[in-house]
Image (cartoon, rainbow, N blue to C red; front, side, top):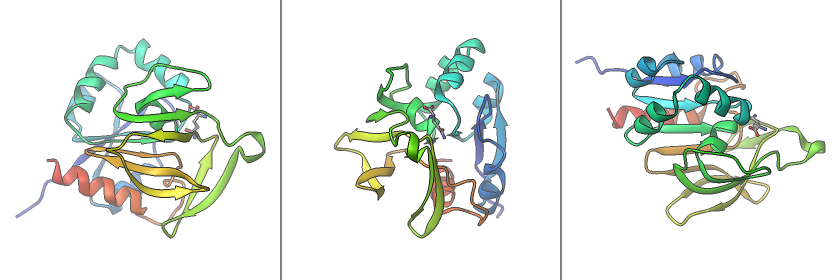
Length: 190
Ligand code: GLN
């Protein structure tokens, strides 16, 4: 029996897209760039990558992708990374901005401050990068915290939605534990 590989659509409007390919393939998923409504519908799960959330929001509006994304996010697994986490949190601060509100999280953008613009950390034995990352200030009761860093949650999950405030894809040991967990979730949701 040949098991179908889950198609993981990485929203490719802006940000770190291609570095996900080797992680997803090593975890047994199919990497797909998604930019159009049709490509969005064809994917089995989504990564909203790290980058600049304000720019991504503008491009989602410009290309008319809000509704098709919101519709598909109701049914399929979604992983928001850094800027992607900001796009799916319920409440965004510093400054406030629109979001898909998939998880009851309050996030503050660029919250590590200038001196810590970028730093590396070891999360569950894996080297990851925090790049102008948000801090999760509050998480609702149904949200499971999978890892913390400096006293705040940085890897969370609730139902089919996963969030990391860091980038695991820039480290070249494939797959990262976060990609492995997400591809498993996508496979189970097929
Ligand atoms: N600072 C970015 C934002 O607010 C997020 C940075 C990242 O995704 N690495 O959208």
